[in-house]
Length: 104
Image 1 (cartoon, rainbow, N blue to C red):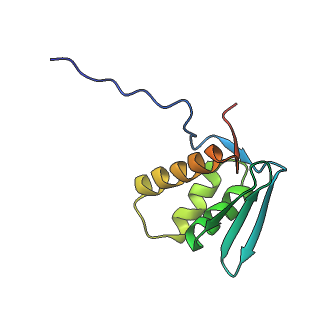
Image 2: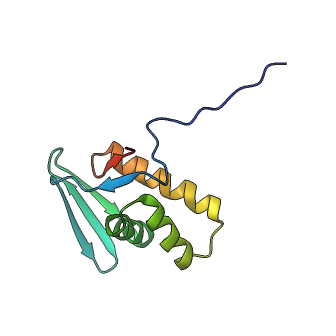
Image 3: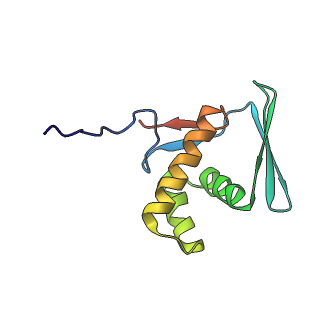
């Protein structure tokens, strides 16, 4: 019987990754929910309350891990679930050009 070895996805961010908002991205908070505009693509994106909180903490902290730790204090959620949800959120934002991720 052969086993499958799962290797980490190199495109997927890690807790130690740093993120920054490109100059081409505009953010507007609208009473707890937010709208993002990627000026490079001309596309708008909406964030719900949780997404807006994640965005705010990601842009406030130096690494994804800082946002993760702050979110653990706010939400009653399993640590592993929050980690996966946050990393998926960052990955999707990066795919749309709304965040830049640096693993260096």
